[in-house]
Image (cartoon, rainbow over the protein chains, first blue to last red):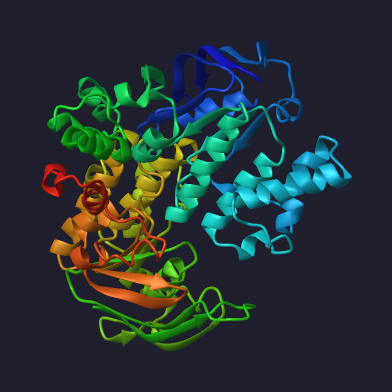
Length: 270
Length: 265
């Protein structure tokens, strides 16, 4: 069980782009948080600080209460697993099995424990049976699921997913939702970047909205997607989920998912 | 006009074909959506329609791919790029331009257009996807979504008459997705034929006249967008129906009057 905290985090890229402009955010152990916001709002820059891939220009990142400055990426990797937006930036092995076992092997798993970690991770993303396949013989969407599996196999207390549903079909999105649900059930902390607000509303208990490198909204989905916040959402390139829009028109409050909308109407009718 | 006639295609080194007898015709001004489960053949269809497969990647193709009545295979590579534009979900930039402006101007410049025309098109394309403020930025320091918008602007600046888009909005926020949809609609109004593979069926419902659903490399459904996107088979084919269709079904299942859930236009 590990909590994450960033304090007054500023990151300026070479060339002067100030991608993060003083972000303060605390994520409790076992919490599931979605980071949303327009393209270029700093979401990816923020999550790359969480496992030390990027270092703060100023401010602090704390993993489990300890400042990450001076801690190596390899050390943080056993605590914070990060799945990249573009899987091809992390896939390197010649087989699916090789890809997934690299991480757990590096942190010392061997024998049956290693087998079990690899098997569970591949089953979670629907790639069991593909162990011998070359990752580049999988389509882009399954390579992304493979990237998820290789991070799941590490069993890190914190799981960070950058745009996990991008390019996934409905089965792939359902798998990702299940991966997040399983991680939450196991008490892991889950942080995801997404533009897919239906996925966010269906899957996460807290929504943090970034705009131009700052946090502009931080609430549970029902509240975050309520009418009072639509202007804030639209100001950062987002549209509230259609379920929330229809619920608002029908006078229902704090309804962000399609299932909740229909359930509310059904109970009205009953 | 872009047309695939009974196209089958097998990747180099693959045991089995990825496409079987796929036929598609895109008339001038037509936007056709391509849907299907992951690995149903959407990207392969895009590669074939844009003339990249087999030319650039080997493999074996049977059937005909024609653009404006000419066989794609007979055109020199430079001409193919001028006739059919293609963009992928994983947006790749040229890597040789030091600003976004130059990156977007790169395509029209290569068409040999006069300087003023290149500049006018570049400005229009940047405005079309709402990124004039990125013009002076170094393309190497863009976010994933910004990179995708720059690639699309570069493609728009070439004003292609045939456009093949493989999940062009994958990394875009809803506002960016809407802008890309509007740009596609404008290009089609100018007579371009556009093929777009997407998981975002709400976008397809808004911009496509027809939709083709693929299943394991074969055409499973084809027809007007509103009927294919509401087809009960769609979910079995691995495709999430548009919001309006989903909500109508949820309402029916819960015994709620579906008219209460009509999505406002």
